[in-house]
Length: 399
Image (tube, rainbow, N blue to C red; front, side, top):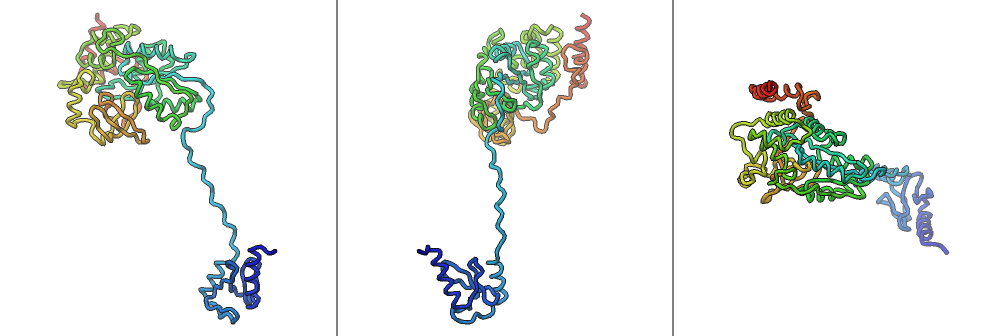
């Protein structure tokens, strides 16, 4: 019994036989070497439109000849398009050869006795002492007077027991940079330690991007304890209080926030460095230096749209993320980074971003050690035309 395809082919062949056509074995039919027709759905399909069955085929026009040649000459097999590797979603696959890394990421500007409590908490919650302390790279005259290099140097002096764990890496600009590096280093988990007021922010951001920017089997955020803003002990000490004391010229209060690991001379040197970097002038505003101590003025400037307008670029002081403001809330901002990472920050926790700023502090390594003559000379150069630092230090040396 003939199948359907054979039936159709035979039907076309019978038509071709009556016309004296010769087949090429591939469904094409020729007359005196000229292409005439092709088998199509069991019937002959003529490519000279003036062809009539049972009659002589009129000569083909040049157009018809070209059509037949291009349409039915045996074409080389079409090469399949090169397959593109599917776009990889998520972070690069990395073999997890390490356990859990404990991390603290913060401004530390300036470092205080309160930060010592944080560092001790990080160490005590780490697995086999595997932890790092990552100071942010933020720097400006008001809220972040110390550059990153100087800040790290001071921290290593203040907290020598944690010195080797304090990281100075220009690539760690945000908490995400730290987490991505931990992923690439093969850590299976990360434990983030932060102040009680920052736990929720770290939890949301780090959790939202697990599996997208990095991949950890375990990602947790722990509180180092809540601060007591009115406390006179370690729990009440903060960088804001230290900046406020420096701006007001109150060394007595400032000294209380410096650990005993630094002597009075070193503490005074740090105090002078901060004042010089802040460039304190007449008419300075507390809400710009330590907004938690003048929340009313900060909010008035925000409501009056004098600061943090839609479209402005700001930096989160908690995470280091830099993004453009897309929405203003009552007391907060919604921002988006260049990498389409969306984050929310309270207005007290952001600052105008330093665009096109340099990453390096420009302070030679031998001038960062507080208490040395080299650092004293550097501090003097930070205030052109003023010699108060030099006079004070000379007076101190005489005593």
